[in-house]
Image 1 (cartoon, rainbow, N blue to C red):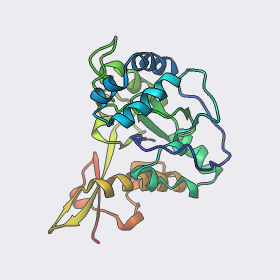
Image 2 (tube, one colour; image 1 turned 90 degrees about the horizontal axis):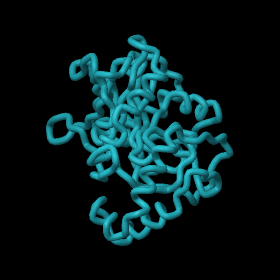
Image 3 (cartoon, rainbow, N blue to C red; image 1 turned 60 degrees about the horizontal axis):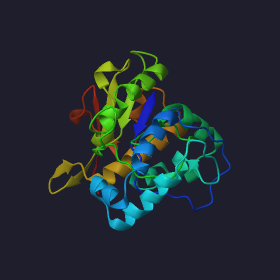
Image 4 (spheres, rainbow, N blue to C red; image 1 turned 120 degrees about the vertical axis):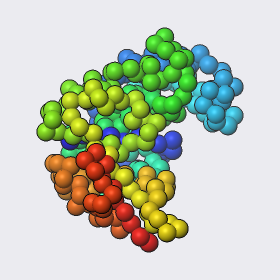
Amino acid sequence: MLYLLSPAKSLDYDSEAPAIRATMPRFLDHSAELARDLKSMKPAELEALMGISSKLAQLNAGRFDDWREDYSKPEARQAILAFTGDVYQGLAVEEWDKEDFAEAQKSIRILSGLYGILRPLDLMLPYRLEMGTKLTNDRGPNLYHFWGSLLTDSLNKELKGANDAVINLASNEYFSSIQPKDLKSPVITPVFKDWKNGQYKIISFYAKKARGMMASWAIRKRITSPAGLKRFKEGGYAYDKSLSDDSNLVFTRKA
């Protein structure tokens, strides 16, 4: 199975990182094309394009100016260690051993506006480029047109067919870069709901963290089938059969 995650806006390139192996992203030539387009933009243009503050625009203009295809450590860091934020707090990779990182490398794929798809141990430079950014490029008016079928095709090369599965733990913004109907394997989407005001609701902060917790739990437990995910009980969540169907596994929690 492949677990799809979104990246995070917040990054960590300062804390001490574990001594684990590193790989390089598979779409660096495409990333370089995007970086060239972004290098040509002034900070004020990035501010308008991304809807960010002038301070962040200056920071990311500098990042794109410094971006190059032949990067390496220490300026780069493995994606699973570089991203922070709610999903990655849930992943809690500080609790993983080397075998867990190896398992994650086989099973987790992080969707990225700049890198397309990142494996956990792929080195990346700090950047900000959300998948929903309307960056006009040679392939179309936005990043969905830029990546086209490349990401779906890449996943298909790793999937084993109808007996395999894609576990969608990404946001709608990022999963929209995938064409589900063209995938070799079915897509299963875990949904996390909390009890609030007399009903179960998706609460963004909790749902994001739960996605990370599920991915981490599945890696550490070596889960091999969608049915196995129903045993997930981290953080007080439990599988709710009455709210679930073949494509959506719903997990609920009452405080």
